[in-house]
Length: 322
Image (tube, rainbow, N blue to C red; front, side):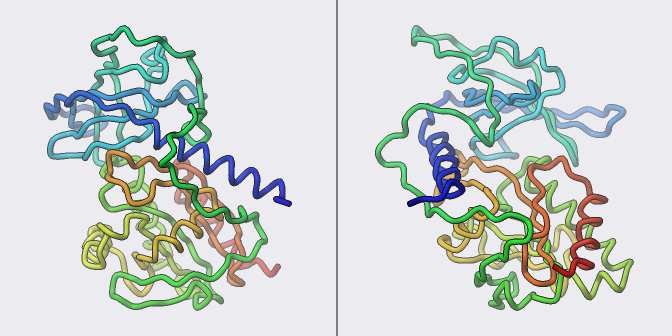
């Protein structure tokens, strides 16, 4: 008999895979980058076309399956924030839209959203949904069921997994016992500054803080695990880490077998598409803190947490004696 927790995990994974299986081809995007300076810094503008996949319950975000942005981002499916909720009024899943993507060194959002060419296809009921808990039609038969693992709660021991760092050194999560571990999940082809790059910038800031506090420095290790291991070779991970100033003794950029990645991610309800091109990739964000006994201490969902909050969790996890 499946436990309620496992059933919740199954349906959550099923829903996510459905989202990946419902892609509808888009016309080629018109990507005309331009830049201008504003009070908030240098902004680069890109113009593109995509399909609305779901709308955020907060009224401030939309998941779009978009075409490639020339010299910036490959075609993929991802949530974009909007600064003016009125931009999303009247939109529904399945609508094809044109929009402007605005990107700074540390932020990104879309605006100037307009319906693209309409068709005679029947309309669908508007559904406002969280990108992490979207509701979609029945998946096509080729959708693969991912392994079902227990979702962990604070205080649960995290199972042992074998990882390989950017220097080609294999190690087990259990080998980090005695240290607080900060674990996040990334892929290096993610260019949008508010997603994987933002997590990496935050861990870089945490690394600086650890180096300023020797007791923390010897009591913490950062691990960034790629869920795109076929593309993210050890050389790419090494170079990616260098762009964020990582110290390999303190911060590991890692690969693992896809089965291990999928299972480890599942413990924290991280969802991503396996073995797909970026155009089909859709993922959420998780940053995880493990205590010195290898137990889950805290899960940071999404990207709205601060470096201060993460630092506080690291300090608390290091002092925890459960």
